[in-house]
Image (cartoon, rainbow, N blue to C red; front, side, top):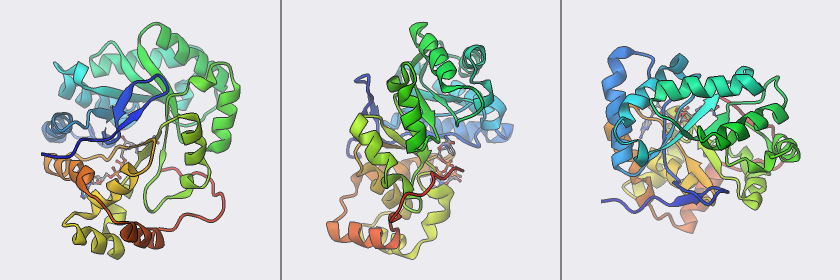
Amino acid sequence: MYDDIPSVTLPSGKEVPALGLGTWNMGENRSSAPQEIESIRKAIDLGMTLIDTAEMYADGRSEEVVGTAIAGRRDDVFLVSKVYPWNASDKGTVEACERSLARLGTDHIDLYLLHWRGEHPLTETVAAFERLKSDGKIGDWGVSNFDTDDMEELFAVPDGKNCAANQVLYNLSRRGPEFSLLPWCQERGVPLMAYSPIEQGRILKNHELIRIAKAYQATPAQLALAFLLERDGVIAIPKSASASRVEENRGATDLEITDEDWTALDAAFPVPTRKTALEML
Ligand code: NDP
């Protein structure tokens, strides 16, 4: 048994788990699909019911794998997908969404994100998102890879304030968002979804992370995720195609870290002292 996963409230009032599952790189190989499906189902079983995918991932095959994994249990899942910036025109957004729905085998996406900023005006993309929302094809919409100035711009367009989340690169080794973006989002009640929350595995070799994790009989991945779960309005979406690692990541909710150890982690992974441009992977 694990401690409950903390929840994050979207501007609509909907509650979602602060720990979900990413699916980038799933769907790349047909032979890996059974393992990927097993890990998605394991995540759902363990309450990590927010599943993140995108039309980009494996050219839509990640969405197909997700669709297979959630078949028969759609209502247990909070489904997030993303539109390519070059598809995010008035008409293109709706068409891309229809294609994603077909691949996912569902009639609605819970949260539909603009993957990153592109050539189409935000006004157009937002209008298309709002139409998809009125048609019941999406529950909410949001953005991804938006820095503070992008969010300001978004909030200035008609209905831009309806943005339900911003998904960005945020983890112990990428603490730039803490300087201004995270407080900006927290003040306005816009959840920040932290992608690559364990830096695709690269931070797990950090000696200080390993040392502190060991003191709690935890793994470095669990501690890296606990760091994100500690923050208000932050949702972490670690990807794993291994059911046992999904289970390991789920255990992040059970860590109670002392102030002294948080301070030690801050020293090992400092917050930038000035505004830096939002990083992207
Ligand atoms: P993560 O930080 O989630 O790391 C994933 C990698 O770490 C995989 O190689 C995985 O391998 C491995 N891993 C997972 N758990 C553990 C563990 N406990 N111990 C050791 N290794 C582990 O990186 P991602 O870039 O995948 O980010 C997460 C999700 O965020 C993506 O899958 C995607 O959904 C989203 N994303 C969004 C972006 C955007 O622009 N909006 C950009 C990048 C990601 P294995 O699968 O073999 O377990």
